[in-house]
Length: 326
Image (cartoon, rainbow, N blue to C red; front, side):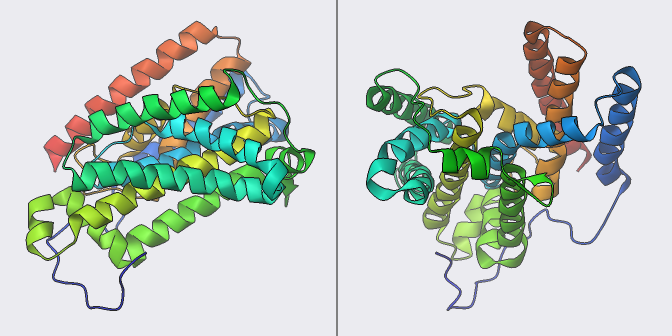
């Protein structure tokens, strides 16, 4: 998938920092620690082992999706279809289980997500269309196909092997679903920081015209970016299907917006060309801790939706302030 046989052409400078920690890099980790300490004083169960275990399992699908979303935003794009792709991946995978087995169905979920992402990326890159419009349209297409295949209702015939091993399984006392999310984050970090593909992703997001002039096959690598985002959606579909013990044609429709909020809140610029996987981790932890703590102290779900909306707006404002300071 990555052409490493030929020497990479000279690249335009990208806004990327290596092995350098500033005060700004410590603000979000400090906020997470202080916020957790304050909530734990109000509700002592917040930092209990049981709740942290539950929080990790809740966070895993969003975390996985945010890793894929980070790639699209760093490349200067956006993907509004990820929740819909997650849903159709889960539906198609479960419907395939009787024919290909449990782990074959899991592979189908990942492949459906990746394939859908590649189609989206091809339309965006080679037809020179707007990522906003194309991914919004793909979200409608994927949702419609999922509803048609599932006849409009969730599918509850989930193999116990899938829910037991991924949905509720633990390894070294850590939820398997969260370990999968961490694994994908590490893969994403390696791709961004240690491969030619990652250099191209930063270059395209930083200055697309300069990347083209440098000989980068911008349409091809843009398509791969959306393919990776689709793959992440498929993996999120695996985790969510196993955790809720159902394949839902319309699953967590607001997760796409939350993934964007997590990425931007964590510190990745909406303009592209900068950021990394640790920013994704910080953003997801903040959103997860916020939602979990409000649930524990008995805040109404309506106010939780309000809080998430405010966080999204604040994240966009912070992104604008960060760009002004660059």
